[in-house]
Length: 184
Figure 1: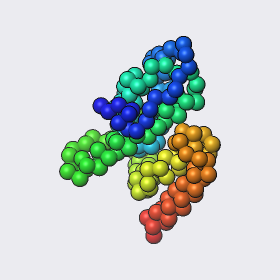
Figure 2: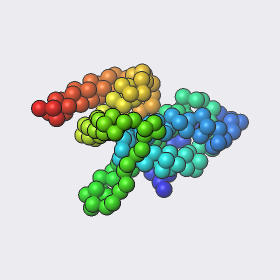
Figure 3: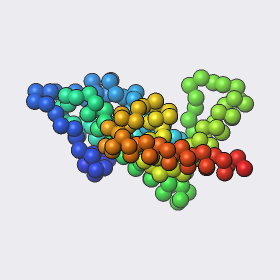
Figure 4: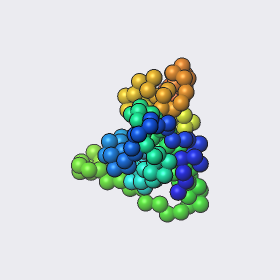
């Protein structure tokens, strides 16, 4: 496993006397991190493996924290890096035709026709998202799917809000163009 430093991220600054508790961090942010992994990684990433890796990085890198927003920002950046790494590895595995089990079963069982339509729509969406640059994919997912504000995304990604809006515009334009190509 890689540390957060190998992904280019540092642990957030902390206040004197703050105590880091991995269990509390996971309880508070585990579902959010899992949701980010699912949405950023699609079917290319095993959610449980990625979440475990992210919190192992957190365990090694974070000693304490004091500001909620900074921890969430650090977790998002670490999540994005881990997901990017998992997606990259999957691409190489696919290139070498390794056998990877990628089937995810839905929690509620729809009819067979609904399940087929649903899985095709999700697969089509992720195929289009896979063709976007990582930063555009992340911004589009965070804004359109997660419902984050431009300012939140800017803080999470460590860029200026104006950059987020440019990336979002480019991501939407490219996504719609790709969608139109597929339909024609």
